[in-house]
Every structure is written in structure tokens, then in C-alpha cells.
Amino acid sequence: MSAGDSEVIYLDNNATTRVAPEVLEAMLPFFGDRYGNPSGIYRFGGEVRRRVERAREQVAALIGAQPSEIIFTSCGSESDNMALKGFYREHGDKAKIITSAVEHPAVRNTARFLGDDRGVPLTELPVDGDGMISPSVIDSQDINPHTLVSLMWANNETGVIFPIRELAEKVKARGGIFHTDAVQAAGKVPINVKDTPADMLALSGHKLHAPKGIGAAYFRTGMPVNPLIHGGHQENGLRAGTENVPYIIGLGRACELALERQNDENTRVRALRDRLERELLAKCKGAKLNGHPKERLPNTTNISFENIEGEAILLHLDHAGIAASSGSACTTGSLEPSHVMMSMNIPYNYAHSSTRFSLSIYNSDSDVDKVISVMPGIVDKLRSLSPFT
Ligand code: PLP
Image (tube, rainbow, N blue to C red; front, top):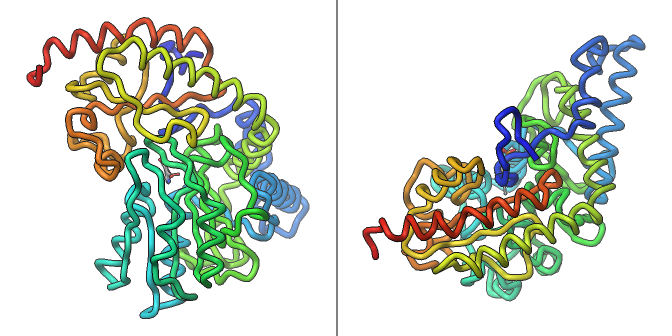
């Protein structure tokens, strides 16, 4: 699948995704003649309000929530901030936060801000060499009704899926509050807050074929919600600002599509990913998989190539018309291995070359063929130039 005019093979879908044509189509009228303010009491606004509420139902359906439990935000980061900072405002001096060592900066840096700036006691739970967390780590933690445990549903770099249901159940059994950053999981694996007792959850539009700049926060009925943005009465007074109507409509449609396609399309994506992974591990010398071999998002593979510089791999792939990523997009710019690789204790000569290929429903067999055909040559060439060898 091309990613625009340049016919790029786009394998960086954990960074962002293409807006689905169906999503764009649903949004366009709201940039055009359906520009009414949903708060208007005239029919022109009322119709828009109904579409916003329909979108709320579509988002809720993707995660098994009630529409009244969904708040539209500007992005996943805002949803995470709303959960963590709102929790702190509610619990003040008694607040305590537990996260994992591999959280996305949206949670990690928010928790660290509350720790450093507000003195909230903060624990970052370790992961094993596969990037997996063991539910038993919860048992040794001191958890009470003023403790927030925030653990990601799936990791953005490795795709590793945490045993969220078990973790949430353990936290709830001890009286704690459970938040999960489901930004990478939503739309790729089934999520149902009826089975998984999460109190709060974050998701983001641009990871599931809606545009950048729209997200949603789930707060279970009865959970106190503290707004980050004060002002008007929008979103029940919990997130002020005139609604970003076209993007909300787009997020709703994207969630509806994701739910429809969840089984068939993700099975197809998984087969593509598995073939890519199998072939790269077999054909590239010194290749090693990062992350749990089974408990992973169907679209993600993260592979290291011993003694090679990850940035150099990406540049060579780019030259071949392939877009991939080393670690998370938010950490590129730094040449240090990511905190995720470091937390997994990946040796430096591997961590440095960690390369993430993240697929989407728009990828095809020929995309995978192309990567398999160029990658062994790139690895051989870079290794022959490597100062390590
Ligand atoms: N959480 C995870 C796991 C992510 O992967 C990302 C984005 O990469 C975010 C949060 C932040 O989402 P957004 O870009 O919508 O703020």
C-alpha cells in the first residue's frame, strides 16, 4: 500500500496510521455545510449534537463501555494526563502511584512529574527480558484506596500485551484504582471493560485510522473525574472547549470500523507480521526478537541486529522506500537505546539496533516481500562497516 504520492511501504503504524477513507468520508460534511455548534439549541446544532453522541456510542462500543463513560479529548496523552493528574487532585497527600518501567512517556513523564513536583510516592514495576510483567509483582505492593496503578495494555515499542485483566483484578481486590493506557491496544485486540475492571482507560484516534489530535478517556461510572481544562459546560463540564466535531465523528467511525474488522483483518495482519518476522530472523545474521514471542499485538515486531546502529538501518530502509522505526517515535532524536529496551536488559549491542516494524490493514504481501528482500543486504553491509566488528 502506498503512503501518499511517494509509494512508501509504510510499516510505522504504531507511530501513526493512515486515516481510513471511510473515516475521512464521515468527517467531510462537518468541515462543510454541517458546521453548527453542537451546543446550539436550533436544529442546525441539534443534528450535530446527535452525531457527536452517536460517535460517543461508537467509541464506547469498541471497549464495552457505556457512552456516558466516554469523554472526548485531544489525544492519548491528554487522556493519560487527565487520569493521573485527576487522581492526584482527588487524593492529594494520600496519593501514591504505581506504573511499569516501560510505560509510554504520556504516563511515565506524567507520573514522574507528580512524583518530582508534587512529592507523590512513585513505583515503577520491572518487566522481564521479554518485556512482560508478572501479575505477582502486584502482591508485594502496598495498595490502598489512594493508590493508582497505571499499566499499559500493550507496549508501543515491542507490542507486548500485559495480562491486564489479571493485573486489574488484583489491584481492585486490594481496593486500589486501576488505569490503563490502551492507546496501542484499541482496535488491534479486543478490549472489554465489563470483563477487565479498569477504572480509567486512554485511547487515541491516530493509532486506529482516525486523524491525529483526537482521543478519548474512559472513566467507569462513579469514578471521580477532575477536568484538566476548565471553562464551558462541554463534555458534562469535564472537558471544556467547543467540541472538535469533525474529528469526534472520525474517531467514532474509526472505532466502528475497528470493531467490525477486529477479527478478520487482524488475523490477516498477524499472518503478514508472522511471515515478516520469521523470514527476517532466519535470513538476517545476528537477528533477535525483542519482546514476548506470543503475547504481542498482531501488527508489531521488534527485532535487533547485533552490532548495528538502528538509525543506519532506518536510513537504508528509507532509501529503499520503507518507513519503519527504531523504538518509539517520541524517543527518536536520541541515540541512546530506549527505556523500554533498557528495562528489558537487552545487551547494548542489540538494544542499539532495535527496529520496529508495525503493520496495518493497509499492508500487503508485496510490502512484506520487499522488506524481506532488502533487509539481509542492509544488515550485511552495515555489519561490515560496524566499528564493533
Ligand atoms: N500511549 C501510548 C502507548 C502511545 O503509543 C502513544 C503514542 O505513541 C501515546 C500514549 C500518546 O498518544 P497521542 O499521540 O495521541 O498523544
